Length: 174
Image (cartoon, rainbow, N blue to C red; front, side, top):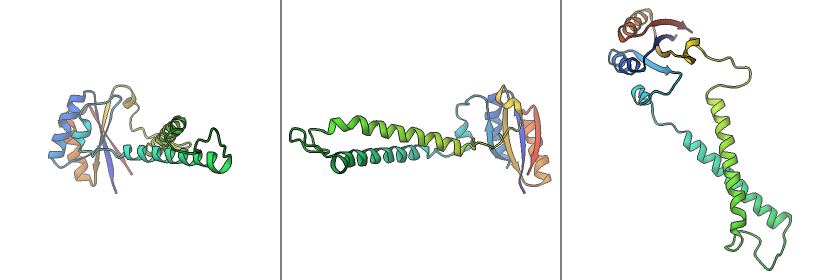
C-alpha cells in the first residue's frame, strides 16, 4: 500500500535544494508539479531522457510510407496515364511532383499521432477526472509528491519536508 505526501512550496529554489536533501535522507521524491517550468528539474529528479521523439519519428515514417503507397497506387494501378512518355512513378523527372504530398502526409501523421499520444500519456481523455492534489498548483504554488510506505516513513518524510522549507504538508493515501 503506497501513500503520498505532498509538500507545498512557494519558491522554486527551495524545491531544487530540498530534492537533493530529501533523496540523501532516503525519502523517495516521485514528482514535482509546478505552474511554470523549472530549469534543471528533470536532472534533479533523476529522470531519464524522454522517448517521445521515437514516437514522433515512427508516426512520421508511417505518414511517409502511406503517402508513397498512395501515390504509387494512384499513378500505377488506379489511373495510369502516359503523359509525354514520362514514367509513371518515382523517377528523376517526376519526383518533385510527389514531394509536397509526401511531406504533408508525414507532418500530418506525426502531428496527429503526437497529439493522441499526449492525451493518452497525460490521461486527458473524455470522462476522466483531473488529478489535482491542491488547486493552488495551477496558480502560484509548487507541489512535491513524496512516496511513503508506512507510518514511520510518513513522520520522517513530513519532518524532512518541513525542514526543507515546505509551507504545508498534506497526506493522501490509496
